[in-house]
Image 1 (cartoon, rainbow, N blue to C red):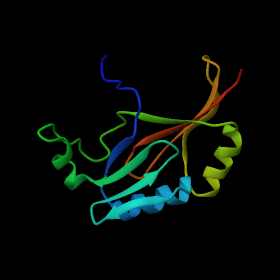
Image 2: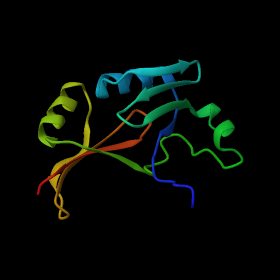
Image 3: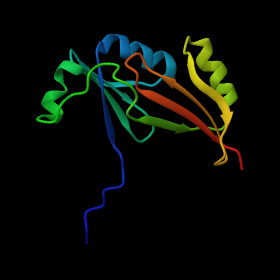
Image 4: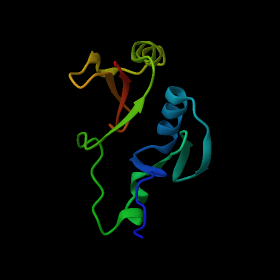
Amino acid sequence: MPVALRKISAISLFVDDVARSKAWYQRVFGLPIVYEDENSAVIEFDNTVVNLLARREANGLIGPAPVARSNGGAEAQFSLWIDDVDAACKQLEETGVELINGPMDRPWGMRTACFADPDGHNWEIAQNLS
């Protein structure tokens, strides 16, 4: 039987300033820090942890692959499926988060909005309209 590769347990995001990113993630998502040291802070979502890793340490994790430069443009988007995009947008704006786009209804039956963390990692909130 093949090994099942279908559950994402951890995502590492390379950041320029761990303290700044940690503060932003705690303010925006209100989630607990489950581990931290001078090079990282790990935040726990329901079934996944997000490791905010200092960019200077990223090569030790992914080398010999190159580490992308800071704010080089979006390469991925992380989506959170929620029940009320409009209410979440209001809450985000109250915490000082600027939306990149949205809220808007998409042709595939979702209402979405997008925002980015201080290092340019994009997050989408999405509500099923059906």
